[in-house]
Structures are given as C-alpha cells and as structure tokens.
Image (cartoon, rainbow over all chains, first blue to last red; front, side, top):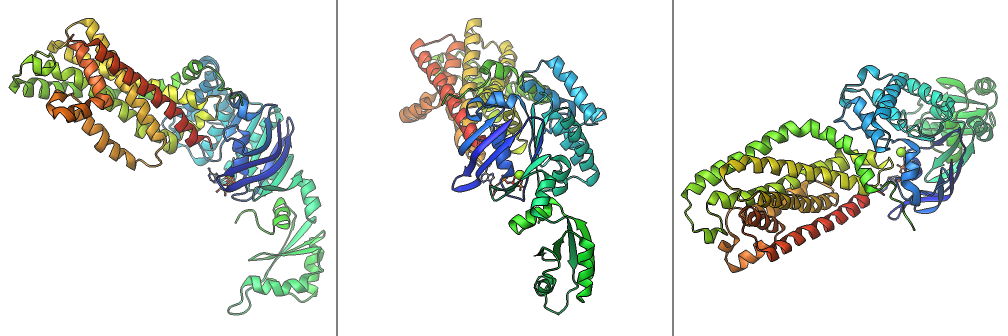
Length: 312
Length: 266
Ligand SMILES: Nc1ncnc2c1ncn2[C@@H]1O[C@H](COP(=O)(O)OP(=O)(O)OP(=O)(O)O)[C@@H](O)[C@H]1O
Ligand SMILES: [Mg+2]
C-alpha cells in the first residue's frame, strides 16, 4: 500500500523528515509513534499526497504522488491532526459536500452519509451545527468524513489527542471495527497505549528518523525487559532535587536490574521480575516513598532508544 | 514531469456546485436585500436628487441625456468591482486560514486549479446576480436605450467582476494577514470607485488625470458599460476595453492558481 525509500521532507533549511524507509502492507494497522516534532504529520501529509516529497522515493497504492495525486487521494481517507470540518455547515452536510468532491453521485453520498452517521453514532446530531459538537464528536465526524469514499487506505493523524478516556475508547472501537473490514490503517500517535491497542506494526520516530520498527510486543521484547520497577524517593535535603538524589541512589540500584533510567521524578529499574527487584531494593536499605511494578510498554522502548519520554 | 491534474476542470468545478449552492443558500438573503436596496438608494440620491441640480450639455456627459443616464452604467460597473473585491478578500482568506475549507477540499481528488476556478465562478455568479438586480431596479428610470445595449453593458459589468475577482483573489493568496485589505480598500478600491469615471467624465480630471483614470481597470468597465447603455459605441475603444479586462482576468486566474498552490501545497 505504501512504500518509501529514503523519504525526506524539508521546510526551507530545516529537514523535518530525514530519510525514512517504510513498507505498509494491505490490511494491516501501521503506526507512527513519536514525540512532538518527530515528523509524523509531515510524513502523513506526504502519504496523503498533499505535501510534495523533498527527497527519496514514495509510492502510494502503487502510484507516484507527484504525478497521480488526485487519483491517489481518491482512494484515501484522511483524518488530519487538526479538524478541518466546515463549521458553517451542519453535520450531515459536512459528509455530503465532502463526498461530492470525490465525484460520488448525490443520492449515493446521501445514503453513505446516513450509514456513516450511524456508524459513528451521530445520527441524532445530523442537523446540528459542527460548533455545537464536543471534541470527541468532531473527531468521530472527521473519521466518518474520511470514510465517505470507501477508502482502501485510511490515514489518521493523532485520532484521539485531546479526548477524554471514554471518547478515546469509543474511537478505538470504531477503528478496530474498520480494521476488521479490511481497511488498511496508518495511525500516528504519541500515546503508547494507543499504539499498543491499535497497531499490528509500528515505527518509532524521533527527530525525523526511524529509531525502531516492529510489532508492539516485539519492540518491547527487543528493547526492554518484561517488567519495570518504578521507584520514587522523597526529596531529602533542602536544595536537593529528585534528579540529583536519584543519581546517587542509582549507583546503589545498579545491578538490581539490567538497566536503570533516571527521570526527573522517578527511577526506573528494568528487570524481568519486578517484585524481585523491589525486594532487593529494600534489602539494600533503600526506602523509596513509592514503588510500582508494571509491565514494560512502548514508552520504555522509546525511553531506552532516545533517552527521552514520549509525552513531556 | 507529467503532472495529472486529475479530472477535467469542468468536472472539478461540477463537484463543488453543491458546496457553493449551500454557501449561497446560507447567504443570499443578506446579499439580496443589499444588492436591491443599495442601488436604489444610490440612484435616487445621486441620480435623481443630485442629478436634478445638474444641467449639462449631453456632449459633455459622454452622450448621456441626463446625469442619471450618465451615472447608472458607471455605477453598476463600480458596484461589480466592489462585489468582486468583497467576495475575494475576507472570504478567501477565511477559506485559506480561518475555516481552512480549502485544506479539506485539497485532501480530496480536487486540484488547486479546480478549487480556485470554482470559487471564482461563484464570485462571478454573485457579481452577475447583483448587477442583474441593479439593472432591473434602474430599468424603470428610463436609462436603457436598447435591449442589446443593456445586455452588452451587463456582460461588461461581469467582465469587471472577473478581472477584479481574479486579481484580488491572487493578491489575497499572497497575504498572510488581513491588514493589507485596509490598504487595498483605501488606496485601491475607494479612489478607483470615485475617480474612474463612474460619477463624472474623466475628462474633468484634466489631461494627465484623465489618462491616469483611463489606465485603471475600472474605467475600462465603466466606459464599456456606458457606451453600450447609451448606445454610443466607439468599437475600437470597446475592443481595447474588453481586451484589457479579459487579459487581466486571465492573468489574475494564473496568479490565483500559483498563489494558492504556493500557500497550501507545502
Ligand atoms: N509547514 C511547515 N513549515 C515549517 N516547518 C514545519 C512545517 N510543518 C512542520 N514543520 C516542522 O517540522 C517538524 C516536524 O513537524 P511535524 O508536524 O511533522 O511533527 P509531528 O511528529 O507531527 O509532531 P506533533 O506530535 O506535535 O504533531 C517540526 O519541527 C515542525 O516545526
Ligand atoms: Mg503531528
């Protein structure tokens, strides 16, 4: 569905995407995980055939976006990072008008719009103004709109950013169903739980390059331990920060797990058995104010690969 | 590199008809009243009441037998300019950066060219309808000499609309904030409205002034509209006037497409 080789995007002197290779296969859910400014949206806009490629090769649905932009866009569904719904049109008209741009007959668009409103549970809002919708409803409407042309490939740029947990779960459920119907999904996110929930395979992006690639489970296995023990220490001296204190403690903790990461507010000890690590911490006479044992996530993968956290 | 612009432009415009009809349905009431009332006020105040004080030989009014008959064709042409400018300043900037409607259009198979042309077709339709209303309102005042003259005058007014519409559209695509609109209105549109021969013969401006006025795009339209309405046509001049407006329209179209592409395809 998508193939990229050494794909680049430059804005003036600044290179936002610095040579990435990709292959997205039919029917899979593929993710871009990365922090702010990683180049996810820049990549997505090139894939959406709205932003010209600055270097390298890109083929979408077997075509070159520089030559066949309109034909490619006709087969894509796009849910941009920021909603571009027409706030002057009502909910139904947003779908209807958009569908018409694809050259779909008016009667067909009307029918599809009804179905899609049903699908995203907005049927009773059909005549409402877009302004009156909640953030989650707007997002659902944007997704419904992106499906009006029955796309082969659906591009979702941060579909759930800014939504409350309930709205996110509702959206995930919709996306999951779409995937079941065979639509290829490409999702960007800076939420590791979203990537884990939705993606069969993903790339971790940072500063315009891909730093790792694989399934969520494989990435965790490869770049992290099974469990993580989080230790939080009370601040000790007057002018001692957690970080400087943790540096000192870190030395004592070294050896308890395979690896230790020092964050501004906590220490992460990576070891396959978290409870064992926690027990050893106590044996050594350390007294953290809080201890949490959890499974490794993609967040840990990212931290390991870049030394930074995903959401700051 | 061969770049396919997708569907033929007529098809691309056709796909946006429903959008523009919806916009029209939402706005027609407001514009219908103003496009009916404004000309009536102008014609009564300036043509009938002010014109009642003006006694001039028809030879000095470019062949018009009354000030009203002189004023109306120019006023409609100037009205066409104002409508076109109004439709291609804030609304275009809004679709670029406030409501960002173009962005969603360009995510579909529509190309930049389709989007620009469809919008300018809408602007032209707005100009045409407002000028048609204007002409119908003034018809009972006895300012129309022949029906074919009125039709050609109407077409000239539309040309004023397409020329200003496409040029100002092109300008708007190159502006990042609306501050420039104030300058455009005060130093471009308003002086042209007053001094391009709509209200008095440009000959009154003196030799140099008259030639400056004759170089403005609006004068071409005012002159065409008036010659046709008064049935006093110098076909050589009419040819020049029409050619200028057509060329400006074509140049404006080209700049509009390149401007919007530069702005939105990055
Ligand atoms: N049109 C543009 N002009 C100039 N710089 C840009 C443009 N678009 C993006 N950038 C820059 O490119 C870099 C990558 O931006 P991009 O939007 O692709 O990141 P992202 O991974 O989507 O981040 P986020 O999570 O914040 O959405 C950023 O530093 C951004 O400032
Ligand atoms: Mg982004």
